[in-house]
Amino acid sequence: MGAYRFLSPEWIEAAMALREELASTAPDPAQTARVNLVVTDTPFGDGEFRAYIDTEAGGPLPMPGNLDDPNATVILDYPAALAAFVTDDHDIVAHGFLTGALRVDGDLALVLILFGEGMDDEQVAFARHAQTRLRAITILDEG
Image (tube, rainbow, N blue to C red; front, side):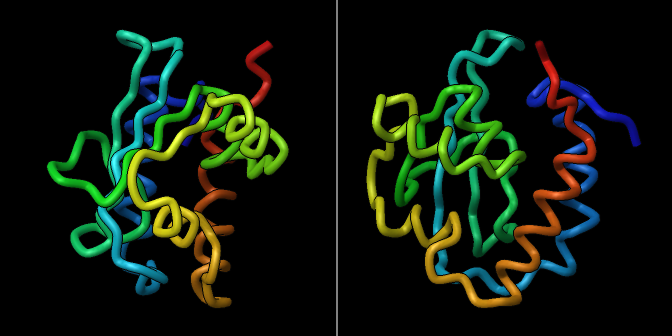
């Protein structure tokens, strides 16, 4: 499997294959959640990418699309999304919160749980493994 620019059509295809591969090994989530993700300022398509996490129907990994009646919607710009899902750069994520480049509409506590707060060791290990695998299919130097 090759490496692609984050959220490019090729990256999405590779990420969906990875999601399918990892689905059977995903531990039960720390919290059930239905969360929409909106990534803005993407260099692909119309500049916006929509995905969702539905822990009851598909585990903790995002799927392209949108849910009706989510518990929350996370809106984040492209650099914050890359930091949150691939590079695990907490400084960029925190900066996104402070500058408004990352916002949560809805249940913030649920989103924090979904993204790591209160995870047990098995959930943390799975999340790290999935992120490592995502990093392997992502071109990080987009300079």
